Length: 420
Image (cartoon, rainbow, N blue to C red; front, side, top):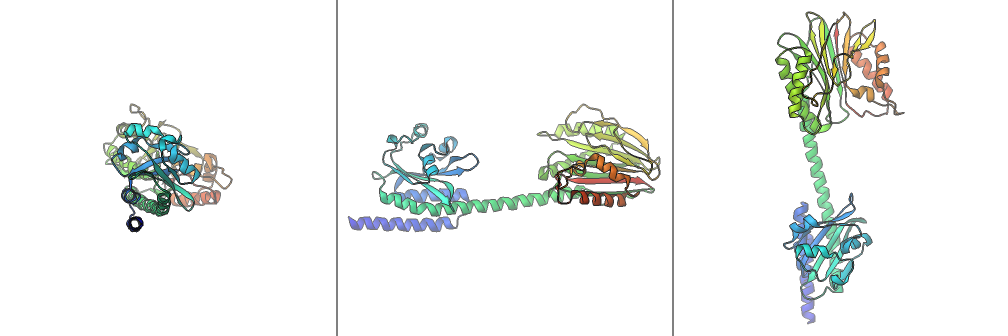
């Protein structure tokens, strides 16, 4: 008899070593848990083995894996608040618990047996910790030959630390993979965004232009463009897409493609913006919208047309005065499909510049959490140099000096066009 017990202990020890080797190199969490359940069931000589993982956000123990046929069903129904059931008690107190008859224990949640038509007789529940942090709870259920013994409890206690470490390693590996995938998506989105934004602006006799763009995030929602229209007019566009990051960059490519198509059909700035809005409304999802200014220059007549879809008004800079172009403003594009945007037409004076910009400049904050605001921007422009390139550099210096170690919570984009 003693020799049989010794043989059984040796078999268990070999199985435990096998499990250690098996899980040490497995970094896929789903595969790891299946392997752990199967080997633990064999080692513990039980009918079933299950694993609950701790969800820190909800403070619940969530069924994750088991040996046997009930896994899919249990995943749908089995979530236990901390302290609820034998699993919750085990997690809350951080203690292993061995129960000979679960139906005599008031902590046992009978409902799971009823729903799965499984009969639980006895069990051992052991908490999983890594560096004093709760990972979950492992349960072995229904010993094949009577009740679980004290030696069974000690054996499970010796197994769960290696299981906890393996789970923690697999999770860390998955986080690394997720970061790598996110970085790949980010790089791809940045590449797509850069391919749609012009690296240089067109040269027009009698006119100069300059731009500046700085994203608060790796991939931003601001965009700008300059497009030669077939009738020799030039379109200047600046805008801001709702949302940030990868999704905004992907939407931006669609927005600029649609704008370029509508510009190729011609018309006034208001007509072009109205057609673009109708197209965008058909494609918009989940509250997506775009604020933008469309300004079309006729370099022969020295006139501009301006249409505004919910964006900050352009600022005209002339040595005699500085003023905001508040005319022809409508709601952001992508919200109301049957709107007709107006446009305003005016003549550019010699030496006059027009600044198009996004709200990243007015909403940038200094160390005292004070925004730049439109008033301060207008004051800066009082002393601005008379050329677009010099004005861009001047504004960058003003922003940097004001913000200091403060925060840039949004992208900053500036586009200046001026008549010589």
